[in-house]
Length: 363
Image (cartoon, rainbow, N blue to C red; front, side):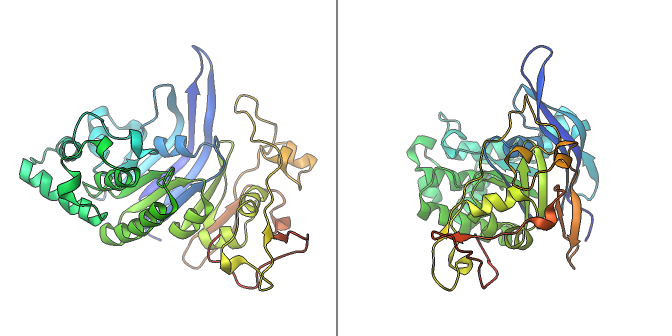
């Protein structure tokens, strides 16, 4: 593979909870993302996905701060820059131009008192590195992007955010995020609170936009079906750590961490993963709850909920271990001492094993 477009090493993020107290929300994250790839961050609520996504652009809210590590981007001009040492003005130019984010909840992402066209004008003029944008140029660029996400510019540009539906706001927000052709696009739950038909439209448009604009994508989701459809790579997070990472095919066909396997067993498969007998697989939830970040268990954080846990799992945190490498250079790694025992096996309502005859292409 070529040089990564994003390289994260030993990243740690904490939130202040008092004058002298803080809670570590993300720890020990190592990640390389290559040009054109699509990475899904998956896991239960509270596992650190959104915190990591915000940290990748240094957009953490006030109490949050990156306490250690490195966060290096390869910029459009080929140079490399560590976001953690970047000054305020260079960082402002970096955002939206080099990397942009689609925030969760498009309902609240827009300023409610200005029109959609003014959002485009502010973004283009403030983050394009000094380029002058006339009113006509703003409207032309905004119109092109809105058409790319299947919206009518004449209808949307003069509108206030409350005059648009939820799906229209989400698509307008995606158009706004790619206004300056960023290399990296971070999307936080891009289909949350949308109906199934609108979700399908958003997914199709993200496929088309990636082909058209060629951006690298990091998206945060609890929807494993969305991850299976959009991602080239998947990283599973638990209690602030990445505990498994690999290609989407490896993760969904042969997970090596019991938590990842538990997440997959908790959702209904599509037809390619249903056995030929037609028996409906039984959904199985993961017992227990994620640990409190203020009182993390010793050793592997997942061991209180894990069927394979031993005393060795409680002794010390388990580091990610590379278990396999694909011909394209993509690795499959898991932080589990018993990865060789993990099997993805579904059972039917009657209790019989229901493994698929075909390799699943989705979950």
